[in-house]
Image 1 (cartoon, rainbow, N blue to C red):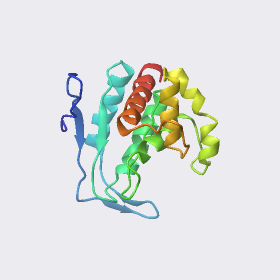
Image 2 (image 1 turned 120 degrees about the horizontal axis):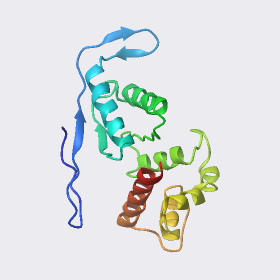
Image 3 (image 1 turned 90 degrees about the horizontal axis):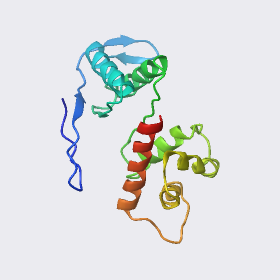
Image 4 (image 1 turned 60 degrees about the vertical axis):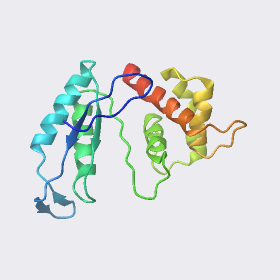
Length: 173
């Protein structure tokens, strides 16, 4: 098991799973090194099974650049698709703005193409209200896409809006 993710407001801390990279792998042409991940795939596959049963968790993949985090994420996404379990992911790259992974997650939830402009994504944000987001939450989220609003949300408002997105996705899929 991984580190405990602290919660605020008197709520219980959240357990997490720790998936660690390995130093050895087999070279595969044109696809980069493959690191054997049977144990991790089994662990994450079980987490997906629990998720399908209504018991979700937070999973953070940590490792050096090139250690296979993206490939492992794609594999888990493929497993989720085969099981008809909704799967969304985002990643953080050094130099990204602090909330960039959340903007990436919103793009995925809305079905935006990777090269789709922020303006095009904004036309779809109203769909997020189906997840139980308030108009203020939606306004806070649009700020992540460069929209200027009368009352600029502070970081805690952005976090609350993103928390509601994640809770809504957990509830609605």
